[in-house]
Every structure is written in structure tokens, then in C-alpha cells.
Length: 418
Ligand code: GDP
Image (cartoon, rainbow, N blue to C red; front, side, top):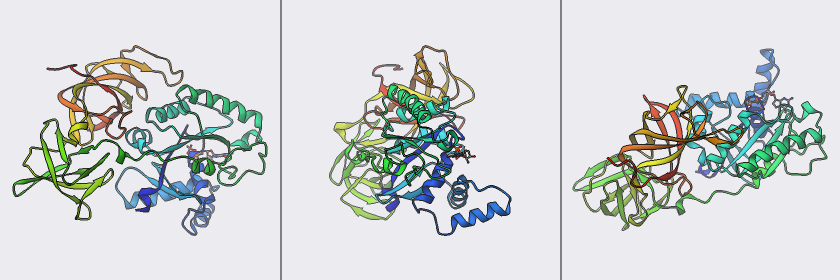
């Protein structure tokens, strides 16, 4: 669909620095709003005696969508002359950080919003660090509320220096640092008339300069098994292809059993159509030529490019839970369709996102990032996040609550066997 091809971005930054206002403005200034929406909201605000806020637009769109769909992620679309964009997970959403950690590697770019008056905060740095952690390297910085600092170039340059220095330390070179006023629509899509000292791109121009990430279709085949059916004497394996492609006649391998079989047929699971080949993002039903054992949680790959199987992995964890994480803690790790028992074997180091200093620690507090070792009694078959972002990440759950997100640094061979 057209929506599937929209360019996915996230809008991050400290609460109240103006993310929602920026989104409202983006929608309006690019003509992406449904007809009459703005007038309707303006008159509603007036009747209620409220001063109109651009963020109302976002709230209104969110309510409409929340009534229609059950998923927990709100997506907002807009378009420039160049292309369509989808903002994955709207700012201010209560599960925003969690969703970001569990899903935002799918963002191809980000806008980081910083209040010109208040400057770079701890939360600004935390969000920037998450972008780095999740491999979102294309970032445009919006230095917002320039109207509150008299559109002063000196103040802008100070904030620009501070954020650029931090981003530089985590390996992100921003594509643009743009002085904006989201409230007044300066340098969002329309070039500001009050900041002629600025010669760089507007926010939409900066976004239009972002490149797409290479398609996961060119990566190794990763098909987490969702369901298995028997059809006569054959097995039908159903799942969504996370990366790579598969064709009729291919030999495939299942982790952790190591069993191989040939693909006899492929059906598009949603359209009920036979296919010769299918790729990343598609949900398929594969018929295998042999009755090989498989269950939900197994992983189907090409035999020559299966992930390392191990009982321990070194991961970077982003911890959400109130209760600090300590060595020995037992949880469950979910990745792909797998859901396995894990134990925290060691906390290697905790990273202070503010100073970027890291050091040994005995516990990981809420909203902190740490390098830890997870061990399992069951085999783990995860990729390094750097090799395959879609197959190298997961979440940690405890009593069915998501308590952390992780990306895989490396599988640890021979470690923790029992
Ligand atoms: P969020 O929490 O980051 O989504 O921030 P909001 O978009 O809700 O904005 C927080 C407050 O800042 C609201 O009262 C906005 O009206 C105000 N605000 C946002 N952008 C601007 C701006 O460019 N100039 C001024 N003066 N206020 C702004």
C-alpha cells in the first residue's frame, strides 16, 4: 500500500519543548490535514474559552485513530512535494519511550526538538542516546520557540553548539540544525521572514534530504515461526518475514533443531495467493517438502546463514521498570516469536547518558542504559543488532509487563552451558 512506502520518522525531545506543536504545524503547513479540521478545532477551542494550540490537532487525530484501531501505536501521515511521511508513534504517547525502544529501528530518520530558551536537557540527551542506540543516524534538530528568545542568532548558535557536541560524541552528525518557531510556523515548511540570518534548510527540506535505509530484503532470511499447521503429510509454517527473501525450491533450516527441508510452496497469508518468492515484511505460509518438526518460537533461515546459537548473549538494555535491575534477576526475553526464560548473569557496566561516562555498577535504575549478560537454559538464536537490526533486538518481560528493551551486542559462545 501507499502507506507502507511512506518514509518513517520519529519526533523526539524533552516534554514541553514543542514536539506536538511541531507536528500540528507540519500537518497544517504541508496541507496534510483533512478539509475543515483546523476550522473545526479553532471553533471548538473558542467555544470552550481555550486559546487554540497547534497540539490540539495531534490530540484530535489521535482520538479518532484510537477509536478505530486497537494497537497501541499511533501513526500520523503527512506529505511534502517530495514524498509521504509517517510519524511512527506520536509524541506524548504514554508508551512513547517503550515503543521507541521496541519498534523505532523502523524509523529511517528523526527530528530532535530542543527549546531555544531552556536548551539541551537530560531528557534531550536521553532521547538522542536512544536514537544512537537504535541506529537512527539521520537526525534534524529543531531549535524551537525562537520567538521566545527574540529570534536571536547568538542564542541559537549556543544551543546548536551544545547539541552538536553531544550528538558528535555518540557518532551522530545532524543533517541540519534549524531555528524554528513551531507556534508561528517559522522554518517548518515556510522559510522564516524574521530569521534571515539563517541560510540552511527548513525542517521539511531537511527531511526530504534523508535517504531510505537499505531494505531488509537484502539481509539474510529471518522468518520467526508464528504457527504451524499440518496439511496431509506436510507442514505449513506461518509467519512474517523479518528480513531477506525465500523462494520455492530453497532449502531452509530451522533453529534450534537444525532440521532442513525444501520449500514446496509459498502462499501470501493475507491474500491467499500462491507465490514463487516472498520477502521482508510479508506474511506467508510455507509448505515444506518434509514433515519436519517446528513450533512457534522457532526460526526459519537459509542453512548457510543461520544466526549463532548460544545460551548467553551480551546485550545493551534500556531499563523501564521502577524496580532496579540486579544480577540474578529472572525474566522472560521475547524476540521474533520466541519467549524464553532468561537470567541476568552479569551487569558489565552502566552508561550515564548525560555524561556518557560508563562504569561498573550493581544495579540498573529506571530509564538507564547498561551492558548486561543474559543467560538462558534454552538456546538463543539472535543476530548482532549491527548485522541485522530486525533480528537482533527484543524486550524483557516480567509478569507480562515489558520492563526493558535490548539490542544484541554479541552472542557468547560456550558461555553458560548447563
Ligand atoms: P511537547 O510536550 O514536546 O509535545 O510540547 P507541546 O507541543 O505540547 O508544547 C508545549 C508548550 O510549548 C505549549 O504550550 C506550546 O504552545 C508551547 N510552544 C510550542 N512551540 C512553541 C513556539 O514555537 N513558541 C512558543 N512561544 N511556544 C511554543
